[in-house]
Length: 389
Image 1: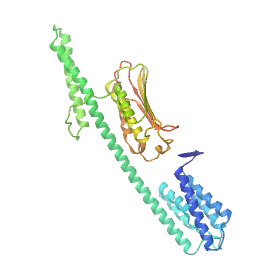
Image 2 (image 1 turned 90 degrees about the vertical axis):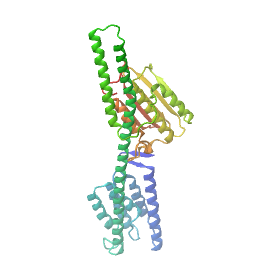
Image 3 (image 1 turned 120 degrees about the horizontal axis):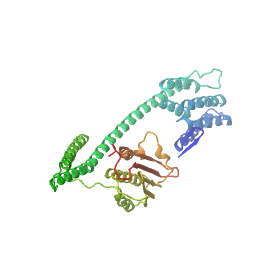
Image 4 (image 1 turned 120 degrees about the vertical axis):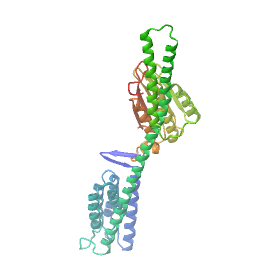
């Protein structure tokens, strides 16, 4: 859940942090006033709450937020008849600066926080005693914690990127295996047909025979080069022990939709436009996109309804998978996380679609749920575009 207004973006967690900081700081001031036999004025309490509400902007504007918190905190210390406080609100604001800002900004923030949180009602501008020393130590502790958290976040992001790159490499190897099964099959068929035509030719016109010989030789050479290329892509993987299975295509979408229904998800399947045969690699990509999208929907949307739409157009085929998962989808936009809360399936889908010169859209819907839509160019004659199959 998030709220956006004039450049200010904050989430429910940000609101909880602000409310919690206000409650803790007000409680601390209340105990202090009782200990010192004083009272917390309404003006001071207002400044405490206002400084805590400034934390709503700490993610987008951490330095500005810290400045506002320090100024409002100084107003609290100057208006309240209690000793100055280094409360939870300035600690959170300084931590946000340490995590998000440059080292020079962090140093300036730390140098400004200790004296400003030590301002009091006394005659001296700063608390000359233990208060200033304690606030300086607290500032150093907060900054150190923030810098350690920033380093941990960078290491975590580096590991995440490494895992994503490995996922891309694994997906490319899987694509290579599938292309080998499809393309090599058709090239082998071409070679056998050319050889059979040459062997069973009723007469022997020289030009036709020479063309068939060239066709057979070209097919054999193309098959050898394809196998050599794909063997490089498949290097290091374990050998397959079973015979290759037929690759699925767009005609198999009804089967996985039925499987989705049997798994408990109410899945609707519609086809628009005149259906026509697709190139095997394009049909396989359509099948894998729908398969991965429905798998993600079952993981993240529970038993919410889903819709699968396959559309045949004159020069392309489009497929769309939408679910009506719980929530408004804002949680799925969390920065620094892989798509769909930790999975790398969308990376593989983008690789497959990009291989054919298509486009893929995958994002939360404004009215809830998630949408995956792919468009793949297919000429009217059903042959793949040059360089994309």
